[in-house]
Length: 468
Image 1 (cartoon, rainbow, N blue to C red):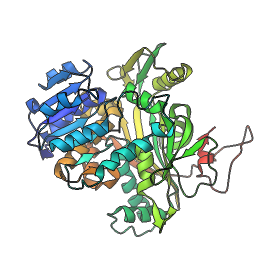
Image 2 (image 1 turned 90 degrees about the vertical axis):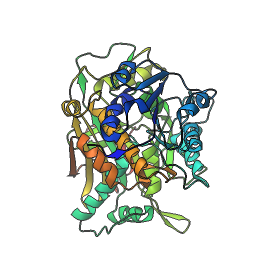
Image 3 (image 1 turned 180 degrees about the vertical axis):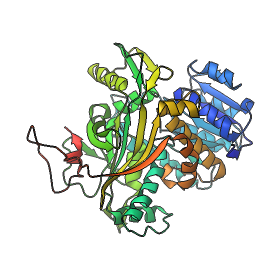
Image 4 (image 1 turned 30 degrees about the vertical axis):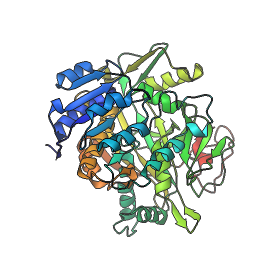
């Protein structure tokens, strides 16, 4: 059962729903004693679970002023810093882990508290694009440092590996010789050859509960604080070379590769059209995520200084119905969080989380590849997990194991990793993993009741995908 033996200590920062869900997986698959694991968290939530597994639990809210004082005595060379927190700077923790000679993994890039919701800051500086550039800047002159895996949960994270497998599947099914792509350039060339115009991270969560949401309460199947933080950020997407209509509320970045754009509106107020096999077509929130930016960057083909090819990429998320109601109330309160928060877990009665990647524009139109995991399956597979959290926790586990097996790779994003090993570790925890072709396009049944301003020359333009 153990995938890797690890001699070092493991230090958690943050122990919310994802931390509580990944702990039993770590103890199951990584050969380390529970007394070599320490949890540092700002809240008492999870104390009982930590005590159940015999893990040390320290309640301490990390700040700019105290994080070194708290963490340095806990970290030595060869240890692992697992960052599952909100409101704690990922960049600060990456730097600290490097100094201490420790491995590192997080599931998203976080600033210090208030960094994403600072009303005095410009929209572009509150973007994931900017935070990603700042994190990747730490690579300079540090290629052989201890491995630090950025943004490796379900999405961002797992979905980057699903994209690579989906590309190979499409190549096989359309008679294209994919060869054996291993570099960024070869993967990008394959996507270009296949004609991929759009990559959606298409997710529909249908989990329901026998404890309905009440007024002034935000209910979700994973971190409320994490969802609220990214939902209040500007909507962001990778911007493809096939696009003809730049959004009226769109903005471009003046630094970096320019692979992504932002909209002058919160992601939680922006909807896009997408498709998954079980749900069919639906409207999802255009929530900013690092993979929307990294995928567009990774799959760019250059012709000298000119961008010859780049796909449009973005997240399209329909959360659980209770979470949709919560977002509606959150928006109506001018993006001020409700007084009460609840993460659905034991009270979930049924439903699945259908999470995958939709690659479109190729010879067979569109192909979705991903996980259809039910709450019943999740409960059988691992304790303290919902269908949503298990997709994240198994991916975090796989990223940790990959880092332990590749300990001197410096700072890496999921797209930089060899995809087979993380997928191998995740697969037993993803329920049904399916690939499905579809004739659906965002033009289907459009303009029947009301006239719409559509561009039928190419159905996969963002103009047609966005719900205005």
